[in-house]
Length: 66
Image 1 (tube, rainbow, N blue to C red):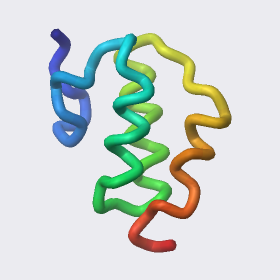
Image 2: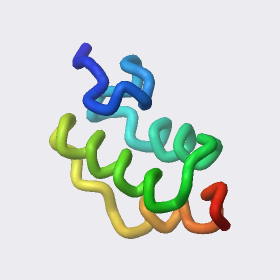
Image 3: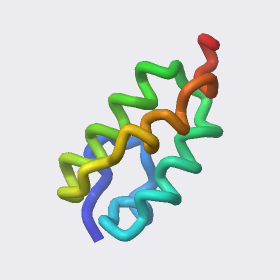
């Protein structure tokens, strides 16, 4: 298991097979929309997964700034 590059996303989610779980975790995280997008990018860079636009779209309206 890889170490979390952000120190925010739980280490058990740093797995290429867990994209859906990461998006769901981010939806409920107490962070701004921009921070959630950046965290998803960091997770993607670490795992080698390329999130789809719909993955980022699932985060729309869930930020504490929304």
